[in-house]
Length: 107
Image 1 (spheres, rainbow, N blue to C red):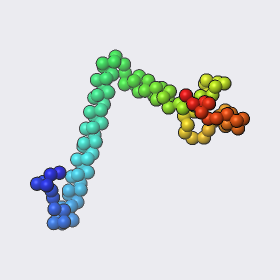
Image 2: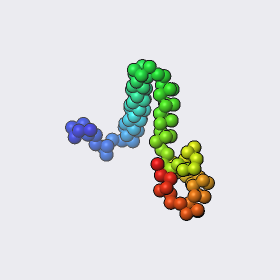
Image 3: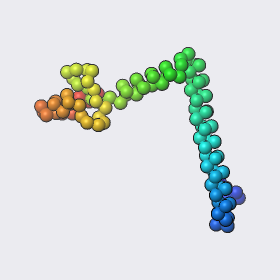
Image 4: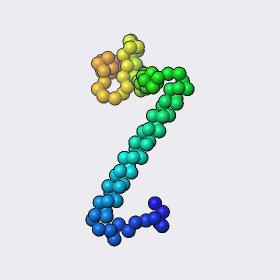
């Protein structure tokens, strides 16, 4: 808001302040809805350009994110992985207790 458009809130009464608050909340909701609509339209355009459904794109993204978030892999069993978040998996705890360093399993 520029200085020329600034509102002197101290000079307003309670009803006027409530009206400004209500109008601002309605405008926020409208702008949030528009932002989501614009994002959806971008998704549709990407979907059309890639000849895939939005669901297929999101599913591929989930798989990619899961692969990217893996930080550690069991050297004895490549199927066993850990993201480094939450409880350490049993295979890693056992390996660490056996004297291995966690960096031995880093990807």
